[in-house]
Image 1 (cartoon, protein in one colour):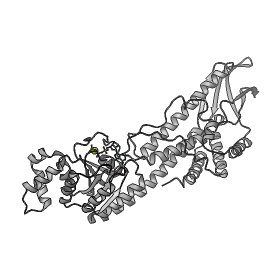
Image 2 (cartoon, rainbow, N blue to C red):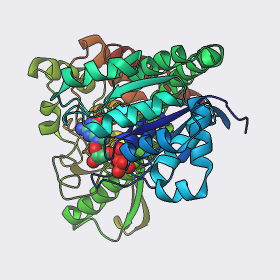
Image 3 (cartoon, rainbow, N blue to C red):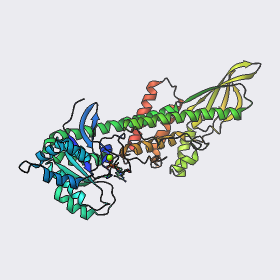
Image 4 (cartoon, protein in one colour):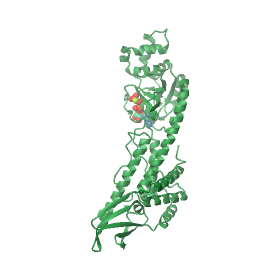
Length: 464
Ligand SMILES: Nc1nc2c(ncn2[C@@H]2O[C@H](COP(=O)(O)OP(=O)(O)OP(=O)(O)O)[C@@H](O)[C@H]2O)c(=O)[nH]1
Ligand SMILES: [Mg+2]
């Protein structure tokens, strides 16, 4: 691991959102954040890494506990002929002082070693005597510094601004619970400017972050198109003792099919969380009654996607007109003219066109096959595509400092916004993928690529 010399020390009073800022800026959701004041007790350094290389570090620190007394001690118990950084160094190197001011020691020592200061304030509370003392102590370290107004709760902004202006050249708003990639880059650009030593170093870091962000988004798009091609390639093989209880058989097939879809969606969601470095966030797709219910992938959902009825009718006409779709069930154990064991292979495509409306014609086709006629009904690839995009956009903008575990939206209505031609193109890709043999890798790859391109176009307006 290459070490970086770029170190920011995040300081401020208790419970102001310091750890949240560190968490968001280092994309590390392992850091303890809580509404209980005094959560952070020791200074901890967190590196932001790409490919094993540390690009910059942030030090999370405890809140100031006794800044007024610490300032007084600095004034009265240190040698006035020395510079303030020297006096601070001397003072906080003393074990006795460290014992008296453990929090101040944790904050000031890393700064005195050469870190730049990020001072966090929450303007919902007015500044106090302690705030003055905190800023005085920080100023006396002689290090570069910036003030961040965390949480967007306006309260005593004017009071704070006039005070902060006396101590900081740069003051910015930063909402650690909402900041996305662009806000992070903006803040890093500001930080780049506070210390001339780091300008040269931080500039390429920002470029690296931008390139890596593009890579991550491309990887996410690959995952979306892989998910869709995987669900269209689902093949369920089951054997049944008898054809007489077809209602029951259909339920069993349907459940296996839905279980498989859920499993694939879950793997997809895990991959998206991995790409965007969310280790802790759990609230993803849950297997519940809703997801297992009959209309989960059905037209009701489709209408929920906001697609006008005419558009839907046209798309379905494309599907219907192009197929006259039928599914075969191969039969084994043929004896005495009637099947005793039915080995059924249900194709993803068959389910796409309406699992529930499968009609068993019982028409024998050839010696060992039965023909099943399928009515177009379900739109599950569109529904899953829409939800996959919604999840991706949600996770990529979910700040690592956020801890509320908000549920992802089920739909983002992106399919509803698609042009008719795009829907037709999607439909054709779905159709090819659902009919293609799972070992026809080249065809699958080609269709995946086409799908990814359409998704990229659909997402053009949504990407930040
Ligand atoms: N809405 C909102 N809440 C925030 C923000 N930053 C922090 N919080 C919340 O404020 C509380 C304190 O956040 P922390 O990041 O733990 O604060 P801290 O300054 O590290 O606290 P100590 O370690 O106890 O000094 C938590 O409940 C956070 O979820 C923000 O930008 N917006
Ligand atoms: Mg903390």
